[in-house]
Image 1 (cartoon, rainbow, N blue to C red):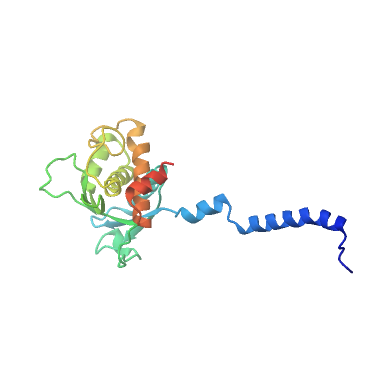
Image 2 (cartoon, rainbow, N blue to C red):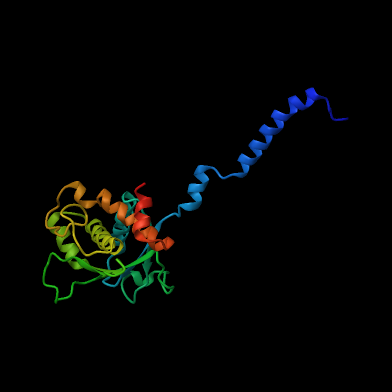
Length: 229
């Protein structure tokens, strides 16, 4: 079959050819959603738990689920690693945690409160590098958490998860300062309001930015600007 070369044939075919070319070019370009998907890296915080005091596994499971919920509310996905210890229930864990700690990981040790820390309201502490504005290692005093849980009539595992998340907040926010309200408040002597067990919106944005900064190696200020757009 011969192709038509008449003027009418050119007039009719040219718009069709141009439209086909435009659609072909558009198909080769990534959509806005796919561009976002390429530039936005999924943020997952990995929590390495060292149960050196021998917290029962049901209590530890409750703490894990509490941490996951609180971090999820702050826009952070999380993964739990129950690292093997020398004794107690966690001595049976299959996770030896011998690999090098990654930028997306934090470590929380579960221990008994040392006698040197006499303030019974202190439930733990975090090591924060003031220069870098971040930390990796936190410690929670399980015996203090249990005593407070009994006084406040709160499930021990739930309060343990809250205390661990509080310390994780210090590590990600890069400061030892406390807030007046919310999960990052300094005094837990009362049950408080429901909102006192969650991160504030501002804290959540800063935590997301801090984790993005760790994972992607970008300045915290730029990560925060992206997270608040």
